[in-house]
Each structure stands twice: as C-alpha cells, then as structure tokens.
Length: 81
Image: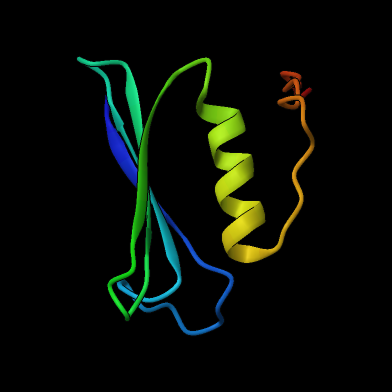
C-alpha cells in the first residue's frame, strides 16, 4: 500500500511552504522525498527502502534543523494485557 506523509516544523501548515512530502510507491519500492518552499526552490530525491532512513535524516536535518539518529530505531511490539 502506498501513501503520502506531509511533515512541517511550522505551527500553521502550508502545503507548499517549508514542508517535506514523503511518498511511497510500492510497485517500484521507492520513497520519494520532496521539500517544498513558497519560492519554488524545491528539492527532491527518490530513495530505495535501504536508503530511506538516511535520506529522511538528511532532509529533516538540512531543511528543519532537527537531528535524527544515524541508525534507524528498532521498534518493539508491545503486548497489552
């Protein structure tokens, strides 16, 4: 199943200014990263599944000034009583 995720560090979300759009295309097994700005000086990159975490880390770091860990976190499944 494919889909889109829109991230922004802003309180007021604008769909075309300082947002990171992440799309997944399951047939190609590719993630598409696109940073949109009102000036239209957009950046984009396609990344394979193994490259996706590093690409996300770089976009969020350079565009939003946030640092994510170099290694992708391991998610633990919790069993609720």
